[in-house]
Amino acid sequence: MSSGTISPEPTASRNITWTDVDRTFWRVAALLLRPLHLGLAFPSILYLAAMTVFLFRPPDLFSFYADRIAFGILLFFIALRIMAVRDTVPFFAGLTLPMLALTALAVFRLLREPFDPQIWSVVASKYIVPFALFHVAVLVFRGPSQRRHFEIFILLVLAYLVFVSIAFLADARSLIFPRFILDESLGFHPDRARGPFLQAVANGVSLNMLGVLVLALSPQRKLVVGALWLALPVAVLATMTRAVWIAFALSALVLGFRFIRRRLLAFCVLLAVTGLFVGLTLGVSKQPLKTALGDRTEERGPVEARLAVYEAGWEMFQERPFTGWSAGGMYAELARRMEGYHLRTFYVHNTYLALLVEFGVPGLALYAILFFNLFRLSWHRPPGEPATIAALRKVWPILLSVYLFNAFFVDMAYQFVIVLMFTVAGMLCASTLGVSEESAA
Image (cartoon, rainbow, N blue to C red; front, side, top):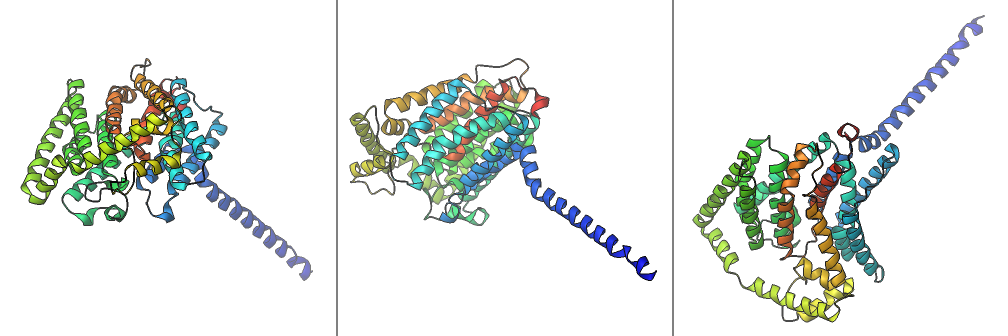
């Protein structure tokens, strides 16, 4: 009898144990699947996280592929989302085809040569990543909440770049983060405000483009936008780059005339002019900064070296006007023709001439077709378009002009800058697909 009364206890204990194991298993599974759910539910957050990696990619070898890992993760989640919601990859003939052709030209040239990770990285930054993320942006930034995420991201990045640039100008090195920005052995222009890009032109173009975007995206945040535009001219001044100065001055002027009826934009342009005068006043009051500004405005050495590079690049184009030079042979040949100049690296320093040298006339023709169709995005305004997209269309030609003007003085291979431009292009294209806001949100 006693054995019969205690025999059910082990069975009950065994049942409780298996139930606990089953619950623990599903809890662990849910915890492991949580990132997958978040990535599928909030693709805009994942997209902006990838852009943050592009902005802060450390230049050391250990993290050299960090941006490629972020890019791969983003594409993985977007592919899963496309299959889950049965969406389709967008296709815009005027943009997709020339981008695809340029990407194919660059990749086919590299496949014929030994693997060089640095050259592949440049090609990925200029062609592969922008081509992919343009189409991803069309899928991601369709609803108001996704565009709001992008707006906050733009405000935060602009505030950060302005702060770092002004801190560099004021010689407050302890406030600059990350610290690799101050490492003179990395990148270019260690004596200028170059930001995490490690290149003053990339920093200046980003400041200019982000400044234009916040005016369109954040009309309700007047205090924040006004404060950023008051500090923006000083940050641009800190880049010590003449092309950036000219592009910013012209874009601010055009913004003022184009949107003169909008009080916020007119006020921001007034703040920009005031900030520029304040920056110049502070600059001339400090002898080291005054000397630096004078050196930059009167410096002839870089101009002469750049003209020599242009001449060498033009000669190379004339030798192969339709086929271009191989990816590896192009830089080696340019260095050979510049024997009298002791430069760290040899680049053409002009996007359009670089296209002619790399791909010949077909490359520049495809680039021209691409940007002609990009400009056309400001012409098409679907009825009932959200106010945010309509505002972006108004500033879109200014944004493109800032990019193209600076492209005359540098070979645009800055991943963050190019992706930023094509992200906005994707948002404009998404508005033309007729996707309802409710289904996209």
